[in-house]
Image 1 (spheres, rainbow, N blue to C red):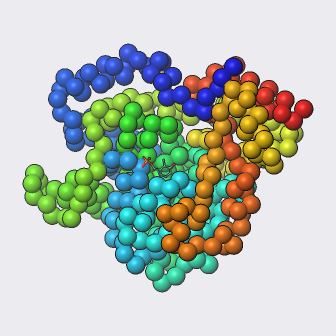
Image 2 (cartoon, rainbow, N blue to C red):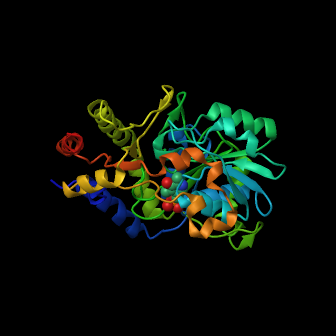
Image 3 (cartoon, protein in one colour):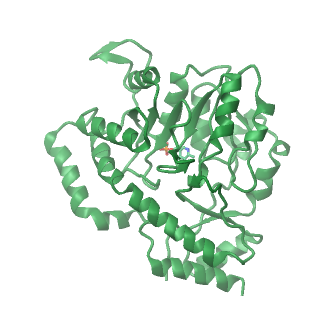
Length: 366
Ligand SMILES: *Cc1c(COP(=O)(O)O)cnc(C)c1O
């Protein structure tokens, strides 16, 4: 059996009729940018999360970038985040002109360790970007209380956490702004690039609205230095339909995770762990094993693809060496770096495939 790490064509096989109708509908209308499909999706996605405003942008990276700019964060400012995130979190901070400052992670959750944040705050610190990595929300109570104490903005990186909850509230609604990516493989994915910023702050929402479209208040009248970062009508229409399936898809991910956890416990594998008050949406199922290369090769030989998220932490990326971050400051990331890997988890994964992954892993330890 072959189990791919992901297979985005499976979604189309299920919803071919719906997707085709949606796409041709937009093509026939002939309105492709900033139209009714985007407005509707912005309202529906913000409503789904329980946020007041949603503003569609070009990607998750742009959502983070414009969120920072809307908060007035740029040159000379420091933004606290983690080094085991995807590169785009850091690109966004860097392109806003600010400097990322790394805090180590918790060993059980792989998320930012809130107890270490205060030690990295300086007079230049302006914001915290907690990353709800792998679909598991960060400890937002602690993060928000530190942010209040030091008057910092909180921009949540929700690229992997559509529908995830902390204490019954959706990720993306705790900070000043929540930044979402709809990159195709995310829990809610477009058929191209797309992103969104959500917020309860009308002033920030309005700023992002201007920033994403040249600062245009009216046609051809620019009142703020802006840029072009828009979510197009075809993607918006597809996403608005897919949003109605998100809970069902997340439920399927959770079912698969539950099965992995119950079947793989007892083996010498460290399984994902998360707070009981969290609803983890399992964008990724990340495990830790001792002989990772051997483990990955064994699975691949049996037809199962696995991936490491992420093999190179930011402080080891050639492009970000200039930040001068020392690995001695991030011992937990260093510790887990050689052990983590992600096994297949996505809504379209069949029960037989899940069973097969479990059987092959058990065989490895036999
Ligand atoms: C995917 C991702 C992003 C970037 O999203 P794009 O839409 O690809 O720009 C940012 N942060 C994290 C944690 C991600 O996983």
